[in-house]
Image (cartoon, rainbow, N blue to C red; front, side, top):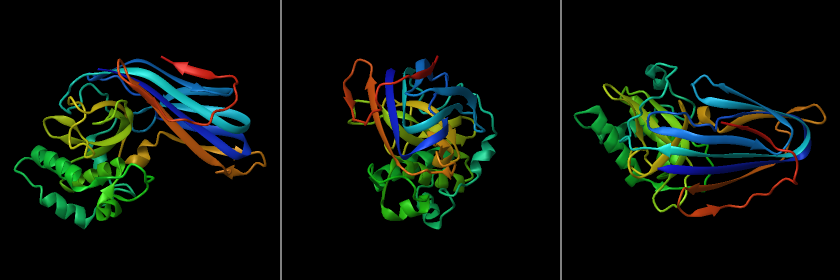
Length: 294
């Protein structure tokens, strides 16, 4: 299937910024299960873009912009071809051993409640236990797509409702408690009832004899099966390792930090041959655009 992605993020600052540096994790890799037909990053100001990789092996783009800047708009667009894989990842270059992904993060610390929940899903085989855990999380929690991310896996588990990232984090805690390396994955997915791929996060667990296998507690399925369709962009121990954008900006007074101001974002995506939809975003006045593509 061919997925067409258009993802636009707009920053607005209450105080003009003298300089901005951003690390963008938005470029998906080529694997046996997905091929990037084309991909580009556009910026609406004079900026330098430099490609590289982070410590997890994800493709990243460093953005450097000189001010004064009262706003910035970044647009990511492209097309990705995906094939069925039954959730098993093939052909991705791994830079780290699986055992690295047994390590917890601040949001994925071990929790007695989650451990007890996992014990209730126990099967004879690890893979069967993971699939049952994935389905149990899907059926046991109400999906909350409006709350901002930031809760720990333990806190989200206690609430009974969770964001897709919360569910992935709970799965990570459960899998690691079984001694199975597990990591957070972000990308784009066309979920049931949706006509367009949207930003999404799920989990992968390293199963002996199979390798990395995807699990999406939000759907109860494995990414790469007929539904949902996923475009995989990158991986890390948890959602904080896979922030789409991270960086720093400096105000005109020379003080580093947040600088003040808000952030707005919007995503518009289209599945080739399918319907389109969009959410509006405030835009910069027309100006120069810098692009990087492949």
